Image (spheres, rainbow, N blue to C red):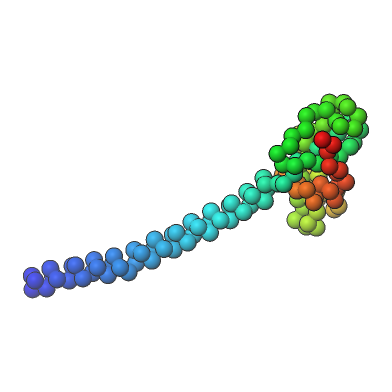
Length: 140
Ligand SMILES: [Zn+2]
Ligand SMILES: [Zn+2]
């Protein structure tokens, strides 16, 4: 009787080790990996861009430059210190990216220039977005 109980204990603990524990760890890892992967993609989409966009608050000129090139506040066109960075707001309804000068950010919620819906998440525009918006390469 005594030896029977003694024998059954290691057997059940072995089942626990090789059975549920690795399975749990595996599914936990899978959940973690997919969560991290998702977050990374969303963050990359929002903050990664290949270009900087600029808008002149004075003359309305639109420029873009390589991601590593930062233009000063002086507008290459009218020479006034009114150049602001451009940010984008994405409308999920019509897939339209509305671009605005960063200084407009505080003056209320952005609205989609296509359908007028209020837009939330800020997204950095890419070179193709800036070009479609009418920006020209900044003069060197
Ligand atoms: Zn200007
Ligand atoms: Zn829209």
